[in-house]
Length: 290
Length: 314
Image (cartoon, rainbow over all chains, first blue to last red; front, side):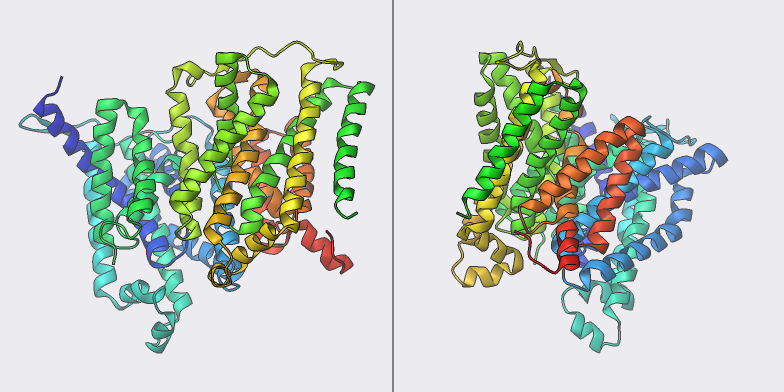
């Protein structure tokens, strides 16, 4: 039976989910959309962030989001290291299309299996005071474990938007894949800019991972479900547009929420894939593409 | 004359496999060898698109599982014989390759890769939700009684897989030496230049995707009879995606022989390692070896051998 209240609740949940998807996809928009580095391992870095939050939470009782923030410098350095290897081995030689992709695939596989060996196949979750709570506004119930990730996701989006639009380094990151010669003439080293950009992309994974484990339990292979999502969002959002990423995330969140309520949760994964395929076939430039 | 040599070698391999089963021996060896030859088919299939054309397919597991589940449906519906299963599994997977290729190959190659990556997850979800083929629990398939003069059905399947491996390698060899192979190599090296020189790039890419998907489906079709319990988790195992890409990368991607070498070496090593050490650690080793080869020896074992001997392998 169709009820307006149910529909409203589902849409609100979808919007909240979308805010969280934005947090997961920002890193891909940055690395794939702006830097032209096809980091298909990004979701697995997010899972790494989840397990960092889990480890800190279970041994020291730290708040997951606080852990996510604390770990960002470490993830930034990890990103810098990964990009250095990637640049020296592939990008410098112009071999990034085939071997670079395989490199990230291998990396994804190694991290996933390493997590599997360390933490096992069981689902892990975190504890925080606000996880079970929920707000009620009229007939709409808002679970805090969805609201908090959404708000943090929005903050991250806003922060990245300001960084890219207002600061010198941000503008340099925006321009590096378009015209690296012009960038060099401006007195900035493209490789250094790309290193910073990629480090930043991986740093977002630390926080996104903390949000992921707030929303629900996590196991090592769960990242695979997010590959379709993050790339659907990035393509739909117009490859590297931060505002576009947010809008596309919310569209996908609402679509998945509707799908899982009215056709069963297991079909939600298919939504992102259909959006990705149809998007690529019909409008590869995305909704907000140039 | 040049054409007769590989054909004779291929026939020879099949005859040797047949004779081996006559000699008997530990049944487990055939069980393990089946997997290795299955990887020869998968690695060769992957390489036709990945190595020759330069388009990375991360969804080998999806094509493999599609072949396996096509076979399951045909077994349940019609009790179809094995050759029909193999052909049908190949055709369905080939069509999937054609479809995905048609939607994404007109764009940059990475979009194809990303689509294949997501494809496995989506197909697995569909199979898990499809009760007719057993859903998440999987389904039991009754293996036919021993056939012809073979002691067990697995030994028969082993010979079938050897035959399929020889056929795949022959197809790869033929493609490499035909004008199609030269066209594919031109796409790999510089797609725009190839297009300008009159190479029908889109049609060739679609051809390669279809053939590659077909062979992966073929590799999956005998799977139900091999395992007898077909479940989504094992049919869509990430192992297939990783290995069918790691084996050509380790063996060498530009020739037909590279994937065969990679599959035999890596496949045998994994069969030994699964028995002696844990299978998760085994996977970790595959990942590390893959990344090491991609960074340090991009031309694979074939490339290393050429460097050492300075000659040209075929």
